[in-house]
Image 1 (cartoon, rainbow, N blue to C red):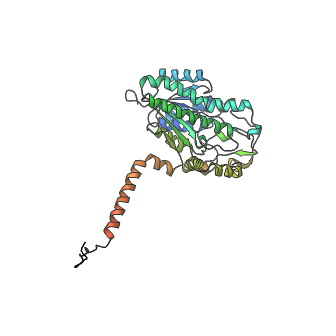
Image 2: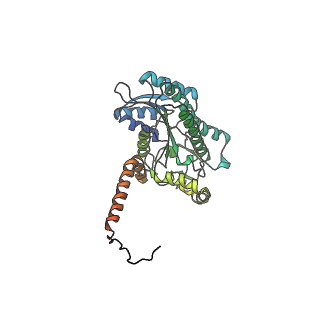
Image 3: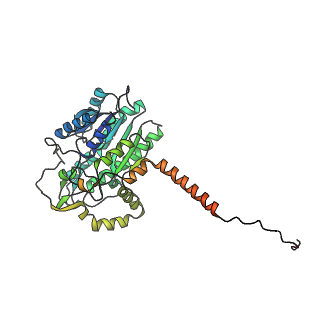
Amino acid sequence: MSHAGLGPTVMITGASAGVGRATSIAFARKGARIGLLARGRAGLDAARRDVEAAGGEALVLEADVASADDVEAAATALEEAFGPIDIWVNNAMASVFSPVASMTADEYARVTAVTYLGVVHGTLSALRRMRLRNRGAIVQVGSALAYRGIPLQSAYCGAKHAVQGFCDSLRCELLHDKSGVRLTMVQLPALNTPQFDWVKSRLHGRAQPVPPIFSPEVAASAIVWASGQDRREVMVGWPSVQAIVGNKIAPGVADWYLSRHGYEAQQTSEPEDPARAHNLWAPVDAEQDFGVEGRFSARAHGFSAQLWLTRHRAAVAAVAVALTGGLAALVRGSRPVRAPRRETVGAAAD
């Protein structure tokens, strides 16, 4: 996908912190030239320094994904600077931690505009370019919550469900057109990102990701890998698999369990400050860089065995077949050899 021996040109939305920032650094280690799209200037400038330190090139694109015009202008600027876009990663998101009864229509509209329509806007800009060239990869950063809604995050869960449905429709169309553009959705588990310090919240305790928690670098590794595969979907972490598969089998059980444990799992015993700044309407990293990690590093896992198995499933399957064949041969070889049966002399005639 690269041009003239250079690394790929990659657009990453929500690139100023958390998963987007970690993904930018991971692509930079491959020599990528990256468009860093987000609202927060301080975070974007710091992300550019991280990318350059990791061996990549970066173009800062200060924009709001809720605006289709902003996203399209950013895409044009990136291609003018670095050439055709090879990979587009839709990662930007917004959320509100709140019971449904306390939410406002404006809050639902804003979360939907960023988390769902931001993906649509990015995908449309990517398709305008990639379909003409009949190549490219679009990676939608999803969540286990795209399949299983949880209490206190109705706006975010609804938006992620919408992304999943949108991708199903688009994937069918790309297959119908025999397009060379690849589309994949990466379903993430709970992650240690700064969003829990800037998300709007009406919870009594400080918001936290539902344990077990993984580091943003685990997500970044999955996203970079998925961009080069022809996988319909990539689940990251056993919790994502359990939530998605379990909800298909017994959604009522999940309802019951989350009604009893979903509230306390999303908040710590520390009281929330209702007056603190949040990023729903304006960025909080315009003047302060929040970086990649959140405040849960001591509890975050830096490795996912499930992701490793997913990435190496062909080799794992081959080993499993070989072991099964070897075991079957061993069992056959351990059976006693029986002497051939003798014909009975004088058997009754027909």
